[in-house]
Image 1 (tube, one colour):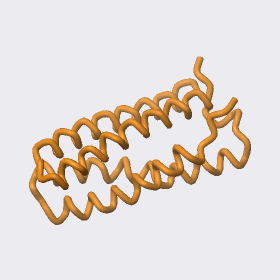
Image 2: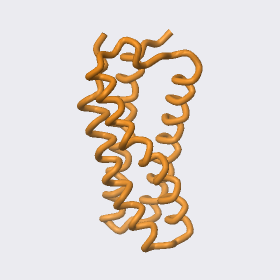
Image 3: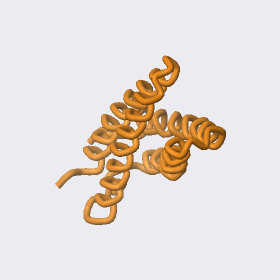
Image 4: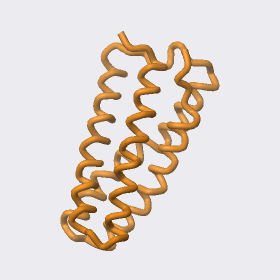
Length: 132
């Protein structure tokens, strides 16, 4: 059975990996490669939402991530979730608006998502404890 710290460490690795993928999608956009941007964003979306769903299932069905954490660690997790949950909600809107070619809405969602994802990345990778 996985422990809370092991799950957090795994999530840190996954968040870092999909963030690199997201950065590659942004680079493709800057270079004018819109089709590649869309494909990388699609992959980013699938991997990110899979991680969110898997983490939620672990929380619901058997792993108490916070039981071994201090009050400070639980506070860090709450702060992280203040960014992670809204970013997971904005992501589908951003993806749908990009696919539908609603350019201004897509850009607005993209800027909001970038801000939320930055918070998700920083709080997740640098503040969540993964030590035993």
